[in-house]
Amino acid sequence: MVVVSLRHPVRAIVLDEEDRILLCRLELPEIVVWTRPVWRHEAVEPGYAEGHEGVVNEYFLVRVASFEPRGAMTDREPAAENVSGRRWWSLPGIAGFRG
Image 1 (cartoon, rainbow, N blue to C red):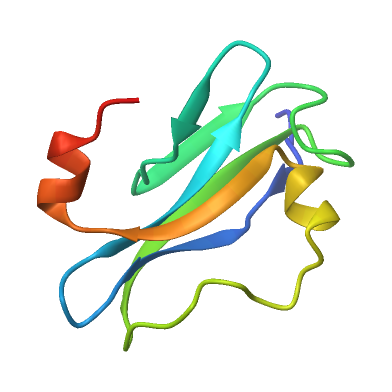
Image 2 (image 1 turned 30 degrees about the vertical axis):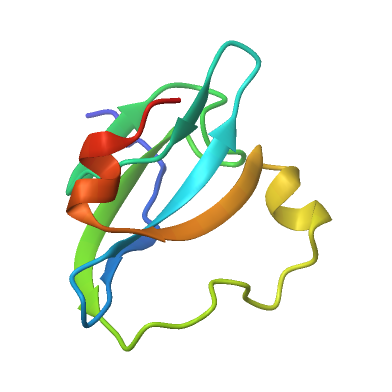
């Protein structure tokens, strides 16, 4: 039996009192996107997660009062993961976004 070392981080889908979702903007070489959450993501692939043979991401719904999505990270830390922005999105804002 082969044992695979998977990383198990926990992610959150964050909604405020107005049902707006908090999304991050990813700037990848081939595309720029506002990330959309998934409930479970599993990738078993060497090199996908340093020190592991893959990753299992679990997502949980968290309701919060609205806040400025700044955090304690420096601007360079999220940029190192291609994150260039954070903002709250309403459903009509997502539906009407062009770009």
